[in-house]
Image (cartoon, rainbow, N blue to C red; front, side, top):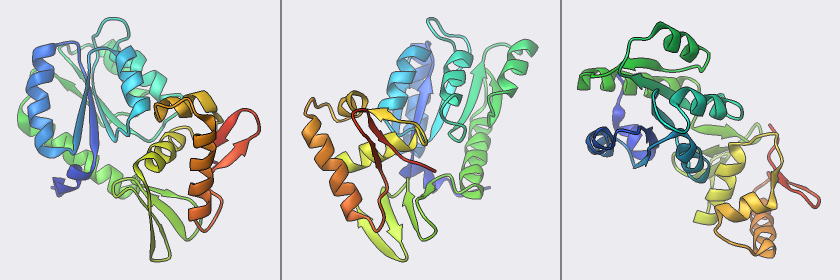
Length: 224
């Protein structure tokens, strides 16, 4: 079994319309994870996901407004790497068949034992370590560590402010896509475009290479 202590550096998003189930599982997840975000439907979960760095998604299939399958399908449009698994109260072959296309860690039938949850968490740890999913390679010698929130370059550490981290992690969710000014300002809870421009400038100046590209009059992007 893998060492689950790494989870203390990571965040999880749990999506379920069952309030009691949320309260119960949240207590367990708080023991393992740094932050536990809760949403009660897929639409709300999308907002939570794009405002926060979420390393694991635990999603109930059957929910109002936007169900678990619809939510994860939206996520997969822009993010093929974030780990996720679905839970359902029914052993439904059609739902299971739909879920296969979502590249999931597992499909769990409720109710489940704690050991089953721990097995999935171990699989999650093994997956991120095997694929180095917590490291975004900026260049051959430079990478961003998602767990430590630091950029490393040939042994040197480049520490980041909380605002710099928010911008970098949001852009990394949309690699090779232009993110407009308004969306990034929303991440910072600001309407001051000059402060955003200044922040991006400081990030690029701090690093050994230009990491974030400006798309004139539109926004910014990170290329892979």
